[in-house]
Length: 354
Image (tube, rainbow, N blue to C red; front, side):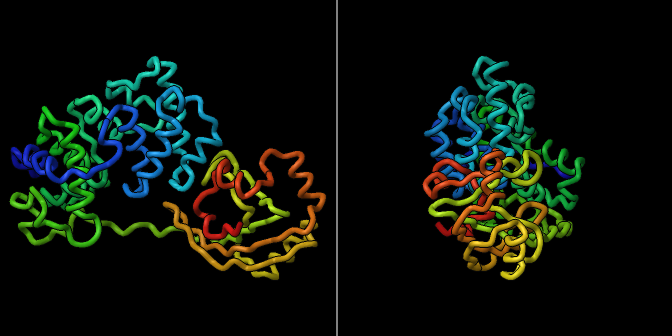
């Protein structure tokens, strides 16, 4: 394994002093702010996170408030960010912090790792940025930067390659500025050493020592293996309206989009005629049916190809009334309630009509 040149950590933090991104969670990097922002930033673009972060901090400004928030409010605050287990884990971790750490986010790396939803990267970010401890925060962006810096052609998803690169990340870390160094690596990967397309090497403080640059092979690193194709699922989505209310169903507590509210939907390809037939078999006969077109939503391992239909019910049949009366996972809500109180995954947003 090649080694990183000495002094590059200091060169990077000097670059960061002039090129750091202005982000809301950086103005006062308390442990709570670093934690929440880092969880939100997982699998999500920075620009998309900013608004969510501000709303979250207004509603849940501290660990104690977070530990007591209702699940419905929690999901509404997270609505649209995806990967909803992240939010559930944050709340569970907040309860642990209240119970085990007297409401104070711990500074110890191992204590941070003991909290639900906090892995090595997030623990390293909190420890270094909020507490000034010499811990690395290594994610895919950092691995990409170092694989180019060292012209490492091994698969960065393999444990040995990842650990070797992590060792180099730590070895050149300036001991007096670990948090700035980690954030500088984040910014370098996000704004200069880009993941797709040609990196902006002329803007990089490491250009003189970058081995991929010297070889003219900047876009060859990190080595890529062909991704496994996503599974395709066809689904029909029904926006069922009665008066000025919309029918929602709560998904099961486990699995994809667990515990979230959704519009009734079913797997398969459904034409207008097939939807009419399905509704009639459910005893729903007094309705107007309008096609809403097609849409697509991509999850990490599955891709939904959806066809939407608007179903205007002129009356509620006995089956729907029974579900509403006897089951907690069916509800009729107004558009205002849907907007303010109920989290519906963004997968369905293209078909909202009220």
